[in-house]
Image (cartoon, rainbow, N blue to C red; front, side, top):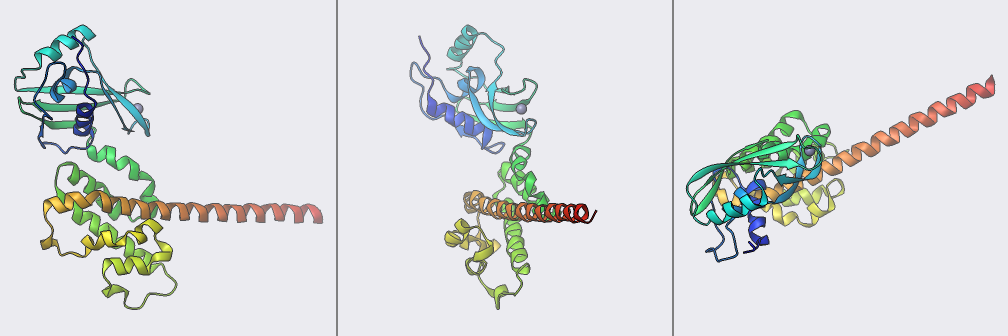
Length: 277
Ligand SMILES: [Zn+2]
């Protein structure tokens, strides 16, 4: 019998590896029918891969599940896996660029659900790899908080993670206002969306257009619940990254312009001294 791989289930398994916080249960997608395998069986026995940032290669790369058994053994095991005992299972994912780059995961597999109970490197470390370049354009304290926000979120802590993001967002707005040659009158008392509108010339265009999405940042802490915070976390994080990315590009442009000026000055100096000599 050919065991059909269900792409939707593989997608769920990928999500469990890459996006689901530790200890969050994932129930199986449906009752098993002949010719299909459960997510647990895919996780434990099947060949599968996912694309993810490799913190060692410092690049997006493909990771493939390391399987020591032969295909025949894997098939037999997959059939056995229709009836699953409670067990802890470890899965090593190999970076396809370098075979000694491995991501390790540990799961608890139950008859009705799976939990991820450990991983190395942590989701925080993987997620933080994309923010490294922004160290140059944000104060160290806020950079650490951006890192910590990702860590809390990877442990399923919504409100805590969101509060960090909010501090960072407010700091960036404050910094951009402070950097203006002429302060905007009444800026401090404006709502978040008004502040974004007022800072239009120095903020990413997409952020300004979609500023109503950030009204959530004006809410009092007591008005926020876990679910709302988790839902808005990616939106606010993307906004922060977009601001930092634009700041970084501006910084690089300014550095390039300065270098060009210095080089031209040096060249001009040489021409003059050659001319006089
Ligand atoms: Zn690698």
